[in-house]
Length: 126
Image (cartoon, rainbow, N blue to C red):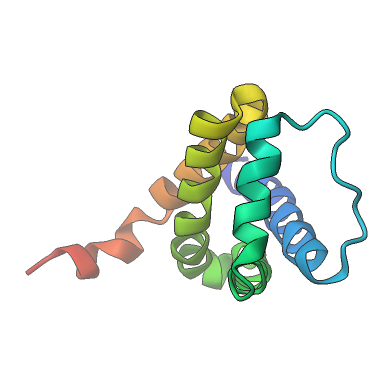
């Protein structure tokens, strides 16, 4: 049962990240109408750095794909982790309205990392 729940959560998490990454290249999802001025300013600053959004998009797509498959899930979680930290900081400092949605994805990523902790043990041992 635990494996089925982890699989479903990983697929949802992976597809959301793939979608977010692809949107950075194809812009098929409109920006929300009710963005706060702070968020508009922050997003404008990030887009002003020409290479930043494509890099984040590539990382999101690769990490999302890797998280979907059980054999590569641990690597995908490590790849997506820095992006998730950026999402947490953006939603905490700039505009907290997205924090509940972000919290769900933080919990899913934390579960994936915890579930694969034995795969990370060699990196943490001397």
